[in-house]
Image (cartoon, rainbow, N blue to C red):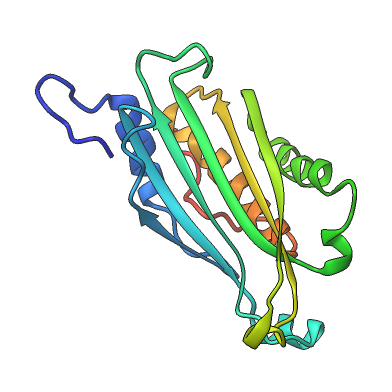
Length: 204
């Protein structure tokens, strides 16, 4: 978060958003933690990192010894000047990376499918957005020489950003919970069970 000063005090709206995100807690398969936010993207920023882990039951089903299924971070930016490209004074920036099965990694429509996971998650949580955009990248890793025995891997990187339309700053909870659902989907897990949220309910 940008350091407050008499000249640039922390806006109340951002303080309320930051307070909500500070309450983020672990949920099944997902561990979350506050991380250092970038300081050059906006006057004010807060960030959360998350990792999706496989439990013993998942490993038995897949037959693989996998611990970390996906990692990600979500940053909420605030600029009281409302940059024109944002179309608002808040901006959510997301990054997610996960290793894919080879069959899916070569799927021609993977990019469009991954983007639909994001839009579906936001829709499922009744999140209104504007100016959404993003990119998907497939990363092929191959080993040679003394490391030639290592199997090749294909990772999906999903970068996205959107402007949340918030009736109240606390409504950011919906966007965060949608992001957690997206993270678990990319990791190959089903969305969180109904009634389980990564953040407390709305504070009306």
